[in-house]
Length: 80
Image (cartoon, rainbow, N blue to C red; front, side):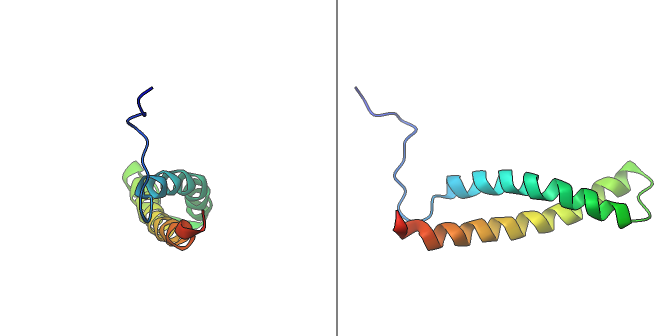
């Protein structure tokens, strides 16, 4: 039986895994963080204001999550 095409054996950091984990963790952590912080933000009267607020907070959560997941993957790559 031929080997599946979608299997990989990455050397070093598996960037596909890093992207998938970053996506999931950012949604799981980012949505509650944006919701909680929006309670104290006073001037969010229009949808544009709300969207810009969510983008500002969400981008910070995303970059922190992405860097953390990458560093975790790099640290643990040789331990499997």
